[in-house]
Image (cartoon, rainbow, N blue to C red; front, side, top):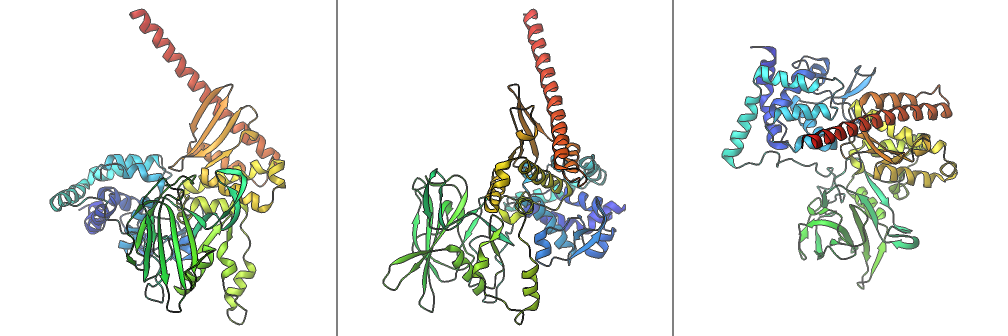
Length: 530
């Protein structure tokens, strides 16, 4: 038996289980394991049960995830390690499923291994130019697609839908036996796009309004009850009201205090008025319903219920802070780079906790660039493209670097307060577009936009002609190296970026003009034949 077939025979059960739960062909998972772990004999596989070479994210390190230092694309990079090989397979599947770059792969049939190989190649899973071809070659030489066929046959016989049984991340464990939960499943932080208090009306920026809640960025995800023993007091299924579909839940505590938590702009609701709920129970799915919304998010409102039945609006951040403390749940509510929970955290003295106090003294506020990288790379942000692979890291660096360079040459942006700069950085990540027309004087319009899959698109208008071009890995690399060159002054960076982008635009124009000329020539020829 060859080494490849021996590896497949050893780990085929793991791969088949992942196929059942996530919809990733078992043959593809096995081929990746064979290729990336050298049949389970690589240093990472032997020392850390890591068969897929996934690099550590900030969240992995924050949660004390184990790792090994290894030289790959760059020296001394940190790679995730696991207690078992099964954990490595699980993390690999979750990495693909939760990274939007691979969503086109999940739209394929679960046994379409050829489509998956090509899809992983297009999405830039690995830096090698023939990665997809190598995977397909391994599958076909070793007959690994037989494991796909086994899973499909079993699923058909038992009436199972492949990929429909993914176990979602559960709320963090706490010391009180699951009595408290965050309203959304998050490992690290929730991105607050609009805080409690006065703000500009999002539908009419010329007027101010009181925002009686917080808005959290979401992506069609589960909404959870926050305390055990809650009662659903109201459900609105009318999507055409101001707050859209909504759920109100009241929590009565042993100390006599009562709080009502409202979730607005929901897509669907899984409870009815009068239902009792427990902490962590799914009550709804986030959405974008209602007449007063500009995009998908979860509006959370909290009211304190008085003894006489009157209700008073309170900052939901204070409520979440209390839930986190009672449930021993570590999290952050980040808005424009600042943790809104910080003002509600109990003071810690040097005598109480030397390590924590020292950490607070050394913590520095995030820079605009650092904040953007955090949003783009973290799954917890609600806008994250998913970190962990070198291509995505390079794209993130390009995007944030362009933002920094644009700011350097915009006097208004330079004069803006830190809060305004952070707000603009947040908006750039939310809309995934940066206007770089100021760096490219030859274009009437020019911007870099990140597609849903995380691909950087250069879009411009030159002499009235619209151009759209997906930047190649080489082009991204050239732009990133220029932006990161500390030896260059900002003026020189601007000139080089303008030159690089200008050349890309000219080549794209030439290609478009050539194709148009060919089409016109064909039309003339067809006209003669007629």
